[in-house]
Image 1 (tube, one colour):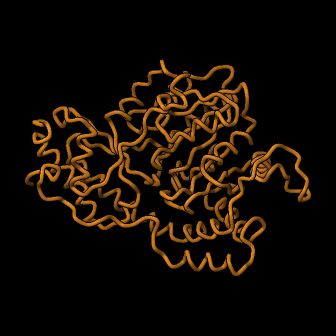
Image 2 (cartoon, rainbow, N blue to C red; image 1 turned 180 degrees about the vertical axis):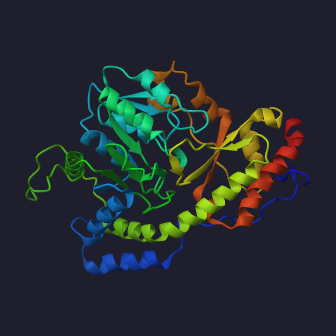
Image 3 (cartoon, helix red, strand yellow; image 1 turned 90 degrees about the vertical axis):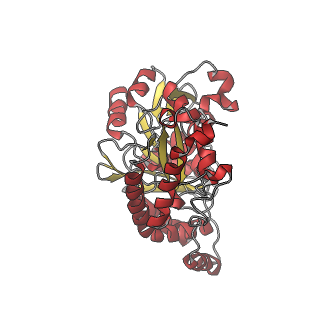
Length: 394
């Protein structure tokens, strides 16, 4: 296959992957409807249509649309009655909002380790972390791969805990025939610009519990209640409302999702097959019951021993040079500045291995390409493996 591009050889891939967000004229049409309506904020039809549509789409009864996935998590925690004195178990292999939202709600984040094959929160490690103060668990469907919800629901029932799904990367993912966001007590979604359904920023809480819905709705709407008057503020709340413009874009995103998801599924399945021929690279595993990943990320596990000890970050640099953009992913959250002082002695070996040397990501927009694009990805990885001595000799 020739000399590696990082050392001056030709690239495997010269062209970019499909852009994200997609360039679709339907977004402008929807936005034009908002402008013509004269209602840009609260009280418009786009917001009413979106919360109805998204709740039904997820298989939940209710939806509260809000400003971000971060606020969705805090809304869900507060709506579930989580606050000072409570502990919430979360993974440390996730975006910081999974844990920072717990702190914002006044509770304590307790980090548990992840499963080596799925990179999702490990139910056994979670149960070991439960104390008399534990009030909730937040399993994250990392990369769009459903977590072991049977196990977490069983823990919730056994210990009297709320189960809040972090679905920020998992729009449309399915577990035992149900879409995520409809399985636990509440589901939390992000519509940030990289997400498979996006409005640039935005979020949502889904639930089938009317009390959780009412409390989340009140908290996101400055303490109002659905049956109250405009200036009737009964609890502490915040202005975390979404706009008509965002809901218009999200409704169009939902219309486009079926075709985009079908393409991601076909391309991901093909790429997973191709990667079976690349030593040291293995895709995130499906557990029993995980029917469908949303493939917001194709999370890949990296075994440096198959590359004769080549460091994961050096492999990523070589892959980027071949025209294949990748991401190294998270740091363990307990080592971030926000948490480092309090959790400095914590050691979660599977999390640390995944963060520091054992995993990397491909973005969902890459899976919107053609089969030849998937071949480029696999060929580039195989090229780096076959020419790994160029990197080891440096």
